[in-house]
Image 1 (cartoon, rainbow, N blue to C red):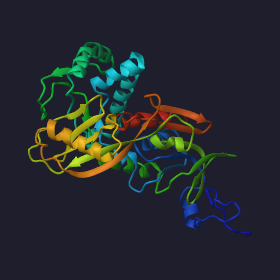
Image 2 (image 1 turned 30 degrees about the vertical axis):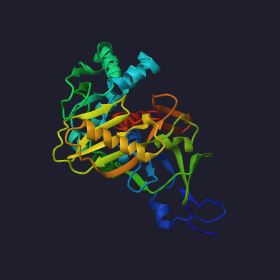
Image 3 (image 1 turned 45 degrees about the horizontal axis):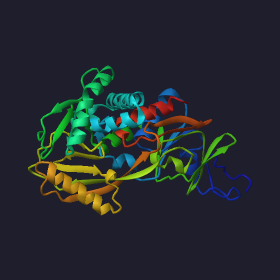
Length: 377
């Protein structure tokens, strides 16, 4: 219709029909953007904020399919870089150089997280970590690996990282051995995400929740992003959807579900550190006088109920004060994994960037990956 206002940012899926967005939405909510970040988790928000610093004049929007959050708000909140048996496993599979590079990335990522946001804002606790062993052979092999591991990690972290400790301390029991590190901790996931979100609007970054992306396609002046509501146009697109990135671009990453349980309040709980078990596949921590425990995918249980039963049984047997553990909260998170352990941060096509495959280490490397992805543009 002649004289009809045109929507330069959003358009209806049918190019011959008028936009489904109102005049106000078209005018104020994302006309064609200089940059659109897909995924408003740790990676995405840090990418958007880093882009703002690099390009003060850009128009930037960040989209997320979920109204509250996705993987980042389902994160268990471990600020970790890998337990001894986990790193031993990586050492065997990836080799020393790749393993050390991965640990260095995680360590620098944790430093970046804390320096960027501050310990109080994310409720970081420098509580240390314990690897709890119930397999004597795995404990012996991991203990023998410690001198080499500590020697190689010292230049990265500036001190000894791991030490053999007396088993059945720190609120744990019925173990055959334990190895501790003072350099790990945990965070309050919701406070961390809320802190990051609070920085978006003051930086002039628009956050659109409930906006899922169905396809990303090349357009004459950048990229078009199909949504259930219409098509968004941007000069550059940054994908921070981790496990789900392969739904939009051909990249070696996919989702692996991981169950997380939180108990009722346990008055006799004495756990003082975070806990890793069996190459990092099982993890536990105290939160608000409760036990959070998750993982168990190494058991390859076909029934999620079996995984939950085994996690609860582990907590009841090995965590002092958790004998009466009953599940009060349960959810499933999605790990972004692939054929390789290292993250993918690259420009896959001109103006289309990815920062994905975090492998369950979102707290440790999410800030670093987001900032690194932004640094490519």
